[in-house]
Length: 123
Image (spheres, helix red, strand yellow):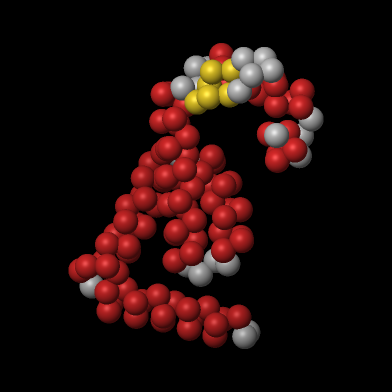
């Protein structure tokens, strides 16, 4: 049940489903199921990619997993598309470099950043 999962009243979920239906993002029938439309699927995939990108970025900079997941959710909805693009490029660059081009450099960079953070936390 969506309302229980989100911790909101069923009437709130019904209202949101109606709005999403009006926007062409879901097929909603009262007392029936909810299905994403093609447009809704594209939007959901976009938001998921953004979330994954921000979560990965936050993990790279050593943010704890639980905080990274929560903060990624905030970032995915709040930033300008140009900023999101640069975050995406940065994460892709680091990931690709770590896997192919310069794994030793990236590994060393991340390790030095970790050590820097540890030194700073002792202040």
